[in-house]
Length: 316
Image 1 (cartoon, rainbow, N blue to C red):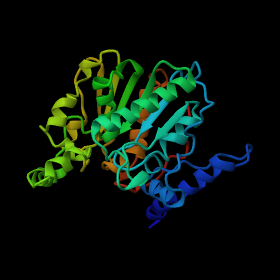
Image 2 (image 1 turned 60 degrees about the vertical axis):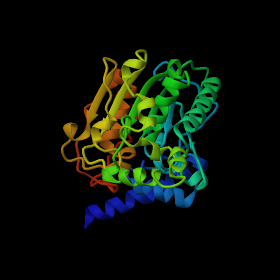
Image 3 (image 1 turned 30 degrees about the horizontal axis):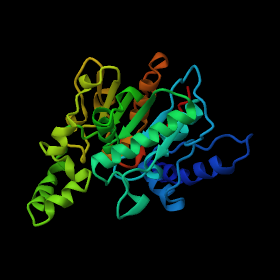
């Protein structure tokens, strides 16, 4: 069917985006931005571990319009897979954009966010310090997918990072722990085995069972960082950060957005959040609320993305 062909085409544009960013002629029109999780997988297959288009220009300086750099932090995965949509969009819009793969383990840079929360948060903090030093900015805005948001909150609360963060935009964050659609019982079973407790302690995502010591210590509450603005974007169809309300925060400085309340035809699940055009539009509005735009509703499929991808790249 025609819409299936569009989805496949969207996945294939990721490699073209990477090539254009690396060496396209300055007079050429920019490549289409992909709106599909499959595009991230395609980029990982083509250029494994490479930062996405638009990211990590260490000579970039924030502008009056966009006065803070934006740090994009992946969940279970890496920067290549997660940010093929938002990184080029933000760079084209004039933001200084930075990404990193943090918290790696035995699987190397192919899969980050595996390390314990404390180690991942320390790595993220060091990266943020580097971004601030390079750009001359006192504070940054963070867009964190899944564990990327939880790790950011850990950094803010327990590693004295709150003064450095102006906004934390979470996409499907397991702030209050996750049942992973019931699979967290396996983690509790492993923890009861000989040596199992250490295995769980050494694995960041494994620490995030609701009510666990790590989740209790994280203590995610926006009111603990009153000078930071928190925007939480969640999907009712999330199968990883469950129940989906785990991605919400309370406080006068917090705002929660349920994608299906914005657009009922958005069926994005957890991994599709970073490329979902509805979620992306909400991120753009959160980063630049003075120039917020109405969200253009469309049918969005899990993982595959929109049936009809946006034709305008979203620069503002």
